[in-house]
Image (tube, rainbow, N blue to C red):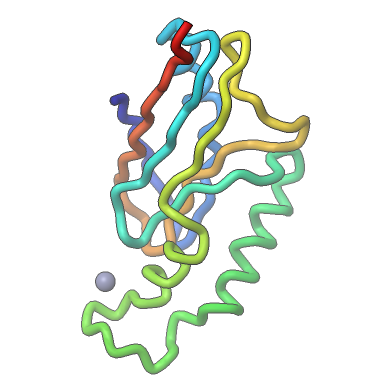
Length: 133
Ligand code: ZN
């Protein structure tokens, strides 16, 4: 298992981690297989979406804020239930195929680490699973 360190700078933030994950794949020498991304934090998540136009991640952050407002009469005493709920909605893991040593992503797709109660220093676990030959 590999770990990628992610430092976020704002309260809610999507961080493009595509290049870092590809670097791990390249260094591992895995040519064909699967790449599992897993976030071991309850206010963070990982997702795949458009990385070409940065407005898209800004829109995702904005709409998640509208869907799950920070103040919502929540019961959790820590006061960050909105972040926990967003983490559930976006999800703690993603699986990406590896082919010819490259992550299989669409032209406009990138991998994003999402933090909803930052800024924080976080970890992303990466498990590379080579095909059996
Ligand atoms: Zn909490």
